[in-house]
Length: 194
Ligand SMILES: CC(C)(COP(=O)(O)OP(=O)(O)OC[C@H]1O[C@@H](n2cnc3c(N)ncnc32)[C@H](O)[C@@H]1OP(=O)(O)O)[C@@H](O)C(=O)NCCC(=O)NCCS
Image 1: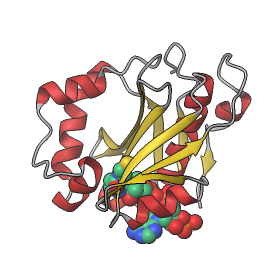
Image 2: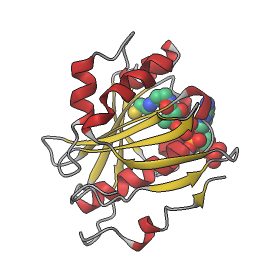
Image 3: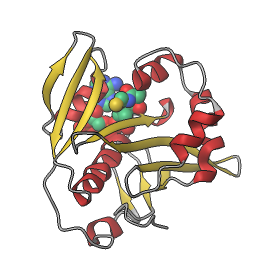
Image 4: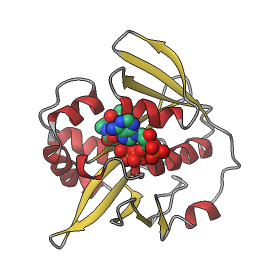
């Protein structure tokens, strides 16, 4: 499955512990799954994602997040089958900013963190940003968020601002020629992370 212009195809990915997830563009029907994902998180993880207390994701918020159209607003989810049902275990998105950049947000369920999923999702978002001609991807990251700061540094993110609590990082996007799903992303299928 692909969305119109997201530049990202659905595919299976093996995580560092051998578990397999599917990464695919989000669809409107994922709103309930996003609510379930947020309910399953530790409060501390929700805080890192939203940079404020976020006890629950309200249905209207989930509907907005799930409505990313893959053209202006790109969002990917990772799912895995648990107890016979497909569950959303990660949400990754890039939203356009007024400056022509993209603003990134990433969320991986607690028990699947540290297995390479965040890196894979960020790689795909950078590709999606490049397809949109976005020159930079911006990330607002809490100063205490070692995982995200480390991950961002692996993509040569530069700090461009800070208020002491939150750092604003920028990843410079190498431009690509827009087009259909690239060969690289077709290869997403059955690739593995380690
Ligand atoms: C930040 C987050 C998205 C990273 O996703 P992830 O799947 O855990 O990351 P990965 O497994 O791909 O790890 C990538 C790198 O980050 C680093 N990292 C991961 N977890 C870390 C941790 N707890 N502490 C320090 N570094 C960490 C590792 O160096 C890793 O690189 P390595 O494998 O070469 O050692 C995830 O931890 C998360 O959802 N956190 C809560 C929400 C959040 O902070 N969102 C960011 C707001 S924009």
